Image 1 (cartoon, rainbow, N blue to C red):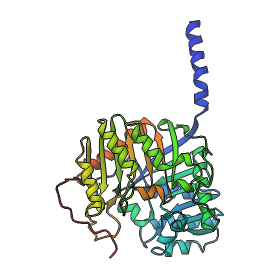
Image 2 (tube, rainbow, N blue to C red):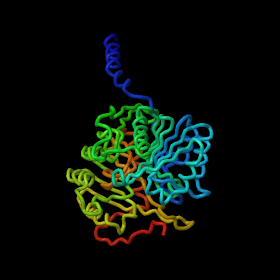
Image 3 (cartoon, helix red, strand yellow):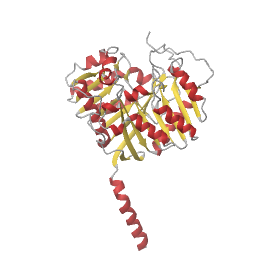
Image 4 (tube, rainbow, N blue to C red):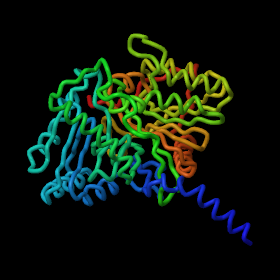
Length: 407
């Protein structure tokens, strides 16, 4: 009996530092589903509900960084705009940051919100800073909660596009994304930046971060950002973290993106992500890639066909039917951006699978090690992969482009 008691006390003594290193936290997957499709997951809350909960629960600050803001009267985004205005009225400081180039296309909403008391809006010109765009999509609430995902601040993203995001409540994790926002907020105000070297030297943060979540148990979080020359900590560079994740795969990789384009417009250098997938397939890892049918007829189509011919690689287009109420530009698509590896880890973020998103544009994401979360994400992936909307890419087929613009 004494031996058992001693063994139990010894086990707790050894385990206690590990438990102490874990911070109580909340993690939640969040989705948007195109109406009139079968992709809904009843146990996954929708984006509108979560955005409203975060904004309505804000006490002091709301920091929102988005590619653009687009509104259409009578749509669900009305409720989010109203919630932001109500937060400002009760004294919450709201800061909104968006891409300067896209502001030319969608100026109305951000300009009107920026006129409200307690709401400040700025534009950041990533074309001048790094040659790309501000493509990140996240919000930080009270320095405590983070929402990050593929969802643009767009009425279409709530009801006509398949999106996937993640909500995290953990000051330890959220503080790193808050620092990214503060950096971009300064850059948008004209603070000079030397893009030839990192703004801040490597290893600023102690990552990865070990959390103990209320629903999924232990989880290990690694924030990821792009481009490398303009991130708070260069060890968090997204492309490097993704390639490391893929190179560690032993059994299976499942990934979904709006677009997959391993070749730049002028040919360019070999794409590290594409190379990692090829290396994985060569060591007999099963690779499944799902991309939107907006890739049909594009420069990327040939690369996708080439990839689909390799042993151990399967690739499909996702084809979401048009809405019964008529054509909607830049909608009716799967816009999710995530990678699953071996049932153990995933990356989720705002980048599409193309070199420019990692090298010249602002993007944000995270890798997460949690078998239960990966298992749930794999169910979401399989639902799309096995759905009537998935169309296997035929290397010998000729594909016509699908219209998705506003013309």
